[in-house]
Amino acid sequence: MKKKSLLLFCLVIAAGAVLLPAGYGLSAPAAPKEIRVGCVASVTGMFAGMADGGVFGLQAAFDDINKQGGVSVKEYGKKIPVKLIVVDSESDPAKTGLLAESLVVQEKVQFLVCHNEPPPVHAPVARVAAKHKIPHLADVAVMEPWLGMRQDASPPFDYTWALGFAIVTPGPPGYTILDTWKEELDKYGDRTNKKVGVFATDEPDGDAWYAIFPQAMKEWGYDVVGVDKKLGLFPMDTTDFSTIIQQWKQAGVEILWGNAPAPVFGALLKQARAMGFEPKIISAGRAALYYTDVVAWGGDLANGVGTETFWSPGTKVYAAIGNTTPASLLDRWQKGKKRPFNVAMVLGYQVAQVLIDSIQRAGTLNADAVSKAIGETDMMTMCDRVKFDQKTHFARIPVVFGQWQKTNKPEVWDCPVVFSKHKSLPTTGKFLFPIPYK
Image (cartoon, rainbow, N blue to C red; front, side, top):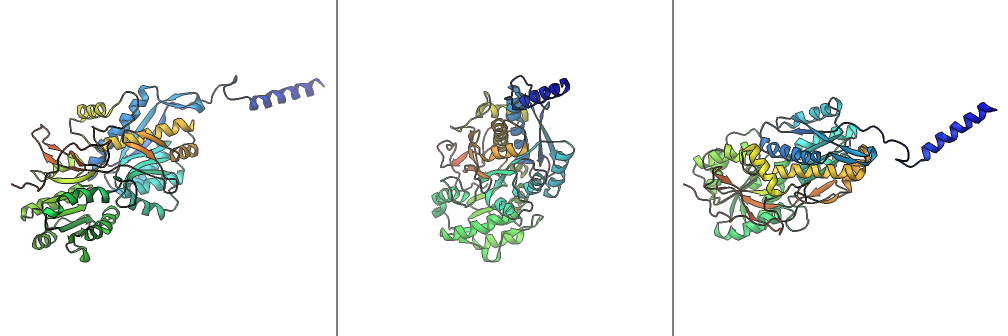
């Protein structure tokens, strides 16, 4: 009888323990010593300018939260520091999937992140995230080619949440390249002969651009030279652009517009200058985003080249971690890198902010719970507001127009914002027109 009573007593105590609220006489589960976050980045290769700033921004945000003791995780009743593990893809999309697999399997990362890099770089990582059900948060740059990849993905990219800008997909003013560039172009188009040469690399990013912009410019009343024959759409490994340039020159092209990686466009630009082809307006999406890339072109080739961009250290609306401000983040970059502003650092910081906030809202490191929290994000970041579309897993960032200009500063080159539809991102310089050639 005594044995039965003792057994019954033990069962009652055990049941009571299960029903007790968390923290009521019970300790929280053992917390991991760190949150392990993996990043496949183009540390070297043609997209290195993106990783240069992007990895810096990711690490800066994680450093900021670690100074506060780490990310607050309710499940463990404590703050846990973050460790960022970066591996180099060498700007090769064929390598990113294997590297992401290694991060998950060997490095035991719990989350995957990436700063602003072209869509093809991210897709293999998204497949790994789907396979292992690992939350993946990345700035995939361009909306349309990314959503095309996502639509056809198998398995579905359900664990990937992407940020970026749109080319043409309707949205608020200043959130597509199309409406931003059109207004800037309209200011000066009548001071040209309206003849346009377009260029793009024949891969998802460039193909999406070429499929949209030439037609749009024709509708705006511009004469787009050779687009019916896909003049200016060339393979990524092209090194001789003389035939294309000659046709632009013969047609009297005064506006050059396109999208390509920096080294490819740099080679095109160098050959154009040697052949005496001197457009009044040049805009090079992707190619002209980063200081290290345009400097590598050499000489004065960068002068007057325009580009889409997404942020300015003079932003009026932002939210950061701790006491960090746009000015202090820029100061950390300049002291650490000895180089001018790189917009990718802000996009990296933004990605890290969203992950940190999502973990804290989820209150756990559980993958499904964190992924759900990412999707429910609605927050101000260092780079504007982030709110995801639940259907597309995509959050849009604002677009402004910048232009590289030669200065008397020690670094020589600056890329002020010359057109913006955003009060939070004011212009910081005047558009240089026409491009001065020596």
